[in-house]
Length: 442
Image 1 (cartoon, rainbow, N blue to C red):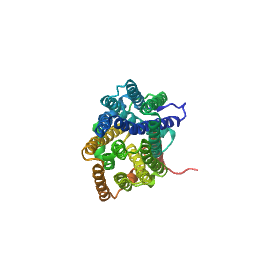
Image 2: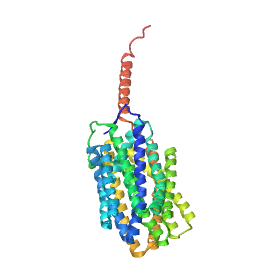
Image 3: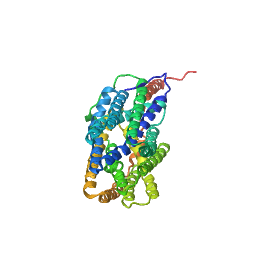
């Protein structure tokens, strides 16, 4: 657990967390453009590109599962610091390999594979810190998660643009040096967050059995997670395979590749900002259907190779429901999961999502290699057209978000005050009842 020092500004830890989250998102968005383009330009193979993308996702399946246990043992801030430091060391080796001329694809894949083992626990630790920092800063949790998703959306605009321009202007080696520098910045921010915490005893250690029991009992939490899983059929495949393959197939440059990623990020930013401002106005199933339809649109614009302005405008529209829904599902999980089992629930959710995403990345890479870009896009479009119809027919009478947004858990201090107040009121009521039969005196 983590207790904020009273001497510090109550909002400083939350701001540091937002800054670390934003910088981490920038690295991820930068890497999602740099990594596939680096492999594709050095090997010319979509199969190698898909294999490296698979290497970047596969470890998250296991690290997400055990990330909750690591957080329980080490603490959230310590887990975040350790994971970011190890990632900085591993990713910092890549420009050294390029400089020495030994940047073999299998070796780059190995470093990415090892680095990804520590990505999910670090992300889980930052997510688990959000409720505590929000409480001490007196900021609603829905606003905190909305700001986080807005930062992700903004960095999804800035990251691909920066990556496209930097790759075109300075080359791949300079781009990998920029990744190492940004990772160092995240480490320094993590040190500051770690230095502002005081240790206290961990309350009620839990196991994954408690998390499974909660999911079994809480229908809203379980079904919300299950409805989210089809998003990861496309997930990273759009950024790591479909868009680079589309750019490579038609001979477009890295600037347009960056603009496509930035367009989706702009839409996600706008959607997350809207959610942060008016969270209670959203409906779970309406937003779910809108996301499936947006994924379908993002594939169709690539399939028909529409003019660039239309593709960019459509991609912005596709990102808007994604940004809002990402903030909604994060808030929903944090609100419905008790603090002592929250890390386990996040770990199970991360494991399930990375499993679907990793398998689909590999399958889509194989399909693109065997059948080509257009057949792959047509197949994915059919899948999401079916999901749009399915989400409409599966709509529930009780909206999951409306049932959850009013269920804000009280902080421990407020729970104690509430119990003490209830005890005082009970004692006062007992005294009134005991003296009610006595004669009144002037």
